[in-house]
Image (cartoon, rainbow, N blue to C red):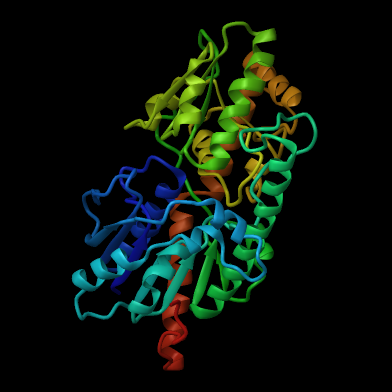
Length: 418
């Protein structure tokens, strides 16, 4: 079987959950035959496909994304009935289409896997193959805080009128994404989501679940004993809005409460950043590392991995990675949506700043609880979220799509994005 993957980032080296998921999918496909990868990358991201040894994967070509910058008129247009999502209206697909036309051969693929809807919108009508679109992060939840009272206003809500308009715009954009997600599902052979919860929310017949995954390492870096100073780590792509918001509330609202009980406790914000997150490094006891080559080295510093997300969708590989490394986790309900975790057994779940800080303090002081969480979380990742299981789920989807297309004698759907 020969496969094509159209991705919006280079999967290796994997510095984010999205990259880890893409690397898992490509690895699974490569177990069944050669894989061509075409990259449509953000200019801030790694553009080279550095394939690990032993994988039959080649870079077919690449294009650098040059989406039109956001303008006030774009944001206002989002609230017009029937409009496309703002990010889609700003897409400039022409460079990717030119690069793909120049790079591709006449060979036909057995299956094409598109990472996110934007990849499908760019190249879907140029690929003659059964098509699967990975909705790894459903976009139809209104961006902005979804937790209750007690959290600070955050980085987005400045001024009552501006906040009200922002909420209306985010709701309208979420509605536009819901329409688009369902429309694209009718145009392709299958769509893939991260959890049964997301499949139920999406509500289409051809959705399949491929959970995010993370293998338990031979030598986990988590430890029962707490270091000096106690260190709380938030890993991830911190230029992504929900993660940037989480970084802000952790540094500004949670950490001071923790320090009331445990003076000297430090926070490390690890991953690609933007200026608002970088400025958090000016706060006492807060370190902003920027991108790192080896996330494991940073996790080895962590006494707790904190994930105070207030918005977003999908399932968080950062939570699975911490649990696989036997590091205690404190997260919000939003952060663990779609994961088969149990609060009080695998991790702590806290949905106000006071509760979140109290959970951090308790886990920094209670070694038996730390050990119990590490044991239960490791067993969960090993049994439910292993890469081998995700590979099997990936290939089950692919096999079903290829077999269905072959048995029906049908060609790929003729209704393609313009």
